Image (cartoon, rainbow, N blue to C red):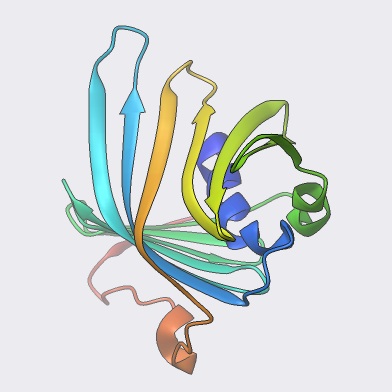
Length: 170
């Protein structure tokens, strides 16, 4: 779960890599491949805004929404009819971290976070793909499509919505 939260926080702050926009929206396909080659695919939409706001809305194979507001993470799992609230131990300043990302070849950058290495594919200032290996030795790849920058989100976009009848886990 820590790596997942780290990745989410990383996406919230991707703008620090000399990227000039203040908000980002994209569809994503996330594939997780284990050591035996078995792959699980997730799809959804990401909305992110400086500073420290993101919503990952998973739509396939299940619906789940992950809200990140500064150090607070809320995961709303519709199939389970529950919401999980977590607080990160510290506020992570990834703006500085990503400013130190090293270009390793054309359009490819690497950044370290909590002893993990992330590869970022960025073309013309737009994030195309993130790849990393998680703590369970799974290869995680997130590809973005239909990217938009400087999106004017409504104020309520980042409001956490949990149905009244859901169980709350803290």
